[in-house]
Image 1: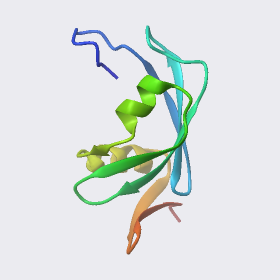
Image 2 (image 1 turned 180 degrees about the horizontal axis):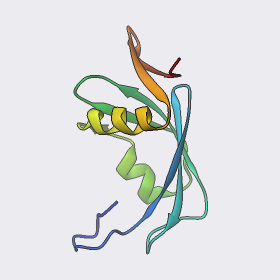
Image 3 (image 1 turned 45 degrees about the horizontal axis):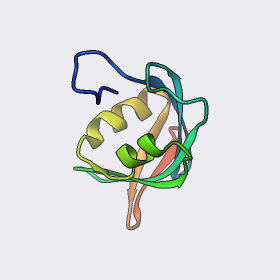
Length: 98
């Protein structure tokens, strides 16, 4: 993620999805943290919304606790991991592909 206004990536890491929760793990970068952040997410065809569940890192929680508009990118990454996002009346659910 780049947020300092320059051309360098300021923090990078990985994520794990469990049902409707996603855990972000920073792995490096100037603003990387040693503690994970847990969020609930809701994905639609046009947006992705994160709501903080437990994230003691103030900067990350301010950036992530919001509505994002590139749900297609998340759907692609989730698909690459062998899962799919299934739209439901409540939003969306991540499930393993058969």
